[in-house]
Length: 372
Image 1 (spheres, one colour):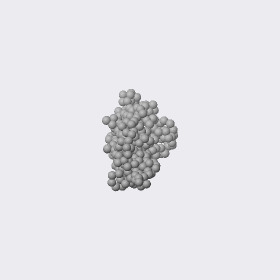
Image 2 (tube, rainbow, N blue to C red; image 1 turned 90 degrees about the vertical axis):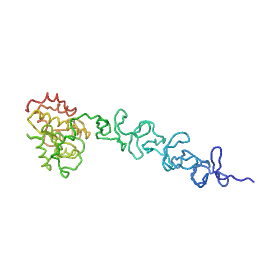
Image 3 (cartoon, rainbow, N blue to C red; image 1 turned 135 degrees about the vertical axis):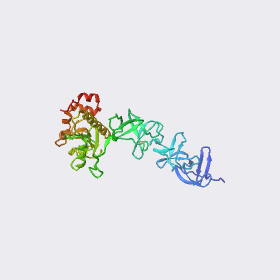
Image 4 (cartoon, helix red, strand yellow; image 1 turned 180 degrees about the vertical axis):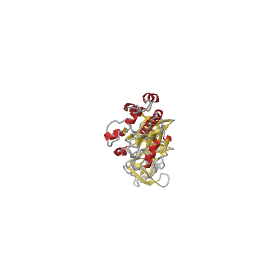
């Protein structure tokens, strides 16, 4: 009388599980069975045959050890065909951005393989990252498709609309993250005189839209400190972020980045408005004008505003005079062209200096010997 085979039987191709009646359960099954060597365990079988390595089940891929048990720790494992995969602590083969051995790597969603070329990829949670040829997320200064970018070393995210300094070189990241080297503007915020700063409760708390840097002159025969003091004391009527003058000094009144009250309906679109104090002294004017240009260029770059003067109509970003505001948005002021012209500064000179910075030798050649 013959005895029916049941339970696990070792064959030349591995283990096969036979039912009590000696048959094998057809198809792919994941079920609890007697453990091959001891107690019960969950196994994946195909027509009764024990499956190991990377296997598909229930719409995902899983990694099973050589004894048939599900691999239950985060690990980088080699499949039965030789490729390597990242496995989670539930045994599932992972894709997207994954942490491993102190770094982050990207595994292609289609193949589950670690990336092997530089590419800009979207993670499983929607953020975009730069991946290197070794599959590792990149940070710091990165070259990509002919441009430079900077990826934050803490978040690995691309930085935009800000300045970064790498190895002593300062770059500006535009709205797309493309870096351009920032030339020395001759101005840093450490030069600001804060004597006339508004208090935290004074002025507007509204964040400005980064469209315009607005250029004014004070419109009276007085210097920078006197006008900064006046604006500080009368801020409920009008004030700007800066008043420049008195030999190239920069006095802050309102905080950059927020709306100030210097140009009526243009105010919400300007994170920085700059007044120029007046003088009859030639050497002082050159210092004042140079600082006026430098401050405008610095904050234009900070806020991603083009270094173009009075270009286009309302809604066209750039450096604007109060005269342009009057012509395109409203008001009655025409400064600062009259005062600048009295020292020999034409529109073309002003526009060139805004775009390229001041050339001191050239500036000296065009400024009149005395104010007219």
